[in-house]
Length: 138
Image (tube, rainbow, N blue to C red):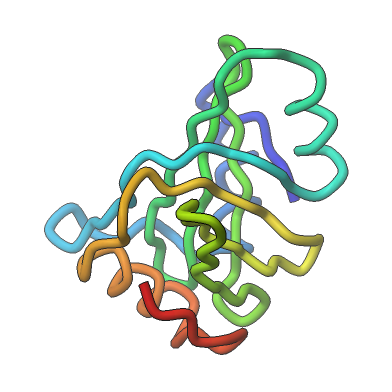
């Protein structure tokens, strides 16, 4: 569910790709804007509480979903998200925008700094399918 991807370990990457699919070819690559990691399933929440460092995260589109990357101190972590097991929703409350990923292991909340672009929404649709949780218009 959560992988330390700081070091180039081919076996670890094979396990991540088994969940989320391999990366797209360079001419089709798509990544998200930087988001703030607010909450996640148990191991992610533990890391968030452990340190006061700002946790920035981004999504990388893969052949069968996406990988959510974030940093804690000097370590890079990845959470593979399979398209069949992940749903998404844009949530707006009191002027704050959040992306909610409903992952098989639990909810991941990511803070957005602005209204999601059409390209970012297209990335989410391509990675996880249409917004099936609820339609929140921003």
